[in-house]
Structure formats: C-alpha cells, structure tokens
Image 1 (cartoon, chains in turn red, yellow):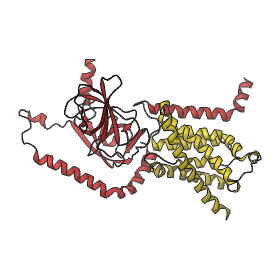
Image 2 (cartoon, rainbow over the protein chains, first blue to last red):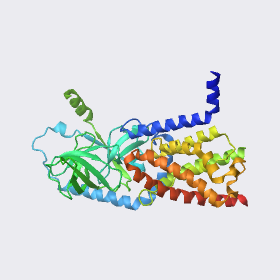
Image 3 (cartoon, rainbow over the protein chains, first blue to last red):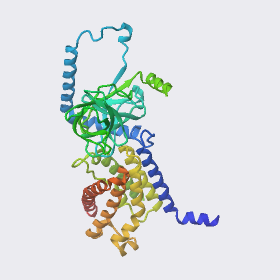
Image 4 (cartoon, chains in turn purple, cyan):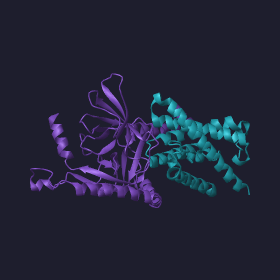
Length: 272
Length: 169
C-alpha cells in the first residue's frame, strides 16, 4: 500500500498528464462518431454569448452583400408566386389543403467554419424557438446541414462540409438516389456516391435532396455535377458536385421542421 | 505573486479570445490558420507548479475546443506540449535551463526560435492528426502541419519581440 502511494506521489505529474490526455482523446473520438452527443460544444451561454456579441459587430461588414442575396431570393420567390398556375390540384379537400407540412424558422449564423474536416456552424436560435435535433437547415441557394445540438438560445449545425454527415440526394431529372458525403478537400465541392450505373448522368446536371430521410423536403437544390466516374467495382458512379451555396459566406439561413416526421418514422418502424 | 497571477490570467483570456474570434477565421489560402494560444504554454513561468501548469494548459485547450466545436483535439495537443516542455527547454537552452535562471527576453534569438519551433510543430502535428483521424491522409496532415507551423512561429516570435521590448524600458 505504502509503495502504491509512493508511486502515485512520485509520478503525479505524469499520471495527471495521462488522465487529461485520455479525457481529451475520449472527447475527440466521441466527436468523430456521427450524432453521438458532443459533450463540449459551442451551443452554451458562454461561447454562444461571445459569438453573438462579436457577430453583432461583424454583421455590418457584410450587410450590402447579404442584402443583395436576400433581394435575389425575393425576386425568385415573386416570380414563382405570380407565375403560378391557379389550379395546382384537380382534386383536394379544403381542410387538408391549408395544413402546412413544413415549418420554417429564420436564423442567423453566429459562427461559420469551413476549413476543418468536421465543420460546425452556430445559429442564434435554440429550443426557445422550437428548434430540435435533426431539423434541416438550408439557405436561399441550397442545403447547409442538419441541427446537431441545441440549448435554450443557440443551436449547432452539422454542416454538409463534415466528413461524418451523410445526406440522401438524387438527380433532378430522374429519381436515382445516392448519399452525399464530403471528402474534406475543398469547401466548394461535395461528393455523391451510390448512384447506380444505369442512371443517366451528365456534366452540369442538377442534384437535389431526395426527401427520403424526412429531414429535408424533396427538391432542395444542392449543386451541379462537375465530374463523374465509375467506382472500382464499376457498379456505381462517384460524382463530384459543385455546391450552389458559397459555404464560406453564409449569414441568413432557414431551419425546416417536417411536422409529419414522427408519423413517417412510426410507419417505417412498424414495417421493420 | 498577485501581479504575476493577474498577468497570466489576462494572457489566458486575451489569447483565447484572439484565437477564437480572429485567428481561427483567417483561413489563409483556404485552410492555414495560426494557433497562437500556445504562447500561454510557451511563456508560462518555469518555477511554478508543474501540475497546475498542465491543468491550466488542458483547460485552455478545452476552451478553444468549446468555441471551435472540435471535440478534444486542442486539449490533447496543449496538454502534450505542456508535459514535454521541460525536455524542449533543455534541448534548446542547454545548461542554462538547469539553473532555472532563463528570462525569455535575455536568451539568444536562435535558441528562442528552436524552442518555439519544437513546441509549435509537435502541437500542430498532434492537432491535425487528431483532426483528420485517418492515417491514409498523412500527407495532408504533414502539409497542414508545415504551413500552419510557419504561420504560428512567425506570429509567436513577433508577439514575443514586441512585448519583451516594452518590458525592458
């Protein structure tokens, strides 16, 4: 017993070092697995508050550009609104027509990152605004990511530029779908795999979300095909996509809540 | 003692804020960021308690991780260089270190560069290895380590020169 105590006392610095190193390695490993709770995250009152304060100042520098982006979006929405065919459905029941399936919340990006391999964004909306884990986040131009952690006033977003995230996507002109993953190289490009060989793939084709995961609605734009090749087994395409979004310059985003998500998940579970 | 304590508290907070609010968003050439918060570890007084020093380094790394949502990579890298600092000191300053009498402002410039470079390169290598977490990306890890280290070392040297100059007067 005496010797054990002596040993601990003699090597206390080394033991402390090993303990702390072990803790930090555990935190690192935890953060590399998808959707395990990230114990240390920026959605708390201290870092969230500091980022909020600094964002209040830095917002003004991008005001002109962000105004232009919002104006472009308004323009696009107006042109859809005024050109819409008055009768979309030939048959509908009045009461269901007005129940909205998707709820949108606007939010501002307090912290953006795009140079690491696992990029996380911080938004200034949290549980007080009805934000929960696994809601989709988009901007006016396209997809951004999925909500990961929330507290009362802030939420972190697992960006599409994150090697652990995977999102279901499809070709716009046909319904062949695959999964969207980032290889960590350039923030302007993202990779789509598991598109079957039979699919009609061409450079410049548009890629949209497939709506299969019930996180994003179907048809959220992602990007266009810049390059493609068959994988080693020659069964699937590996496709390189140019993102519509400039991930390095995001200020205003929309959080999408699919109100039917629970119902969809219930049906899928009972099927299994 | 209180004076020394307050200097290091201010340095801790100031370096942390500069790191997370400014320097982590530099993204020079798309991915190169300096990590100057390790100046706290480099400049921490020699005579102080080693356990406290390691614990403070861990906390500093953990705070950076919290702000940057990076899991525990900064904490791991910071605690490692805090632990191996005596070896780095001995290697770069030689016999001087044994007498525990070095003042950073009075040391040879070349020795100072060696000391800062050793700690920075080890820190950055651990940092990027854990960040990529993939042995097949070793080239990318080395590239990132090299360029970010150059950036960090230059900034650290500049800061130490500027602040030691005012101390002398």
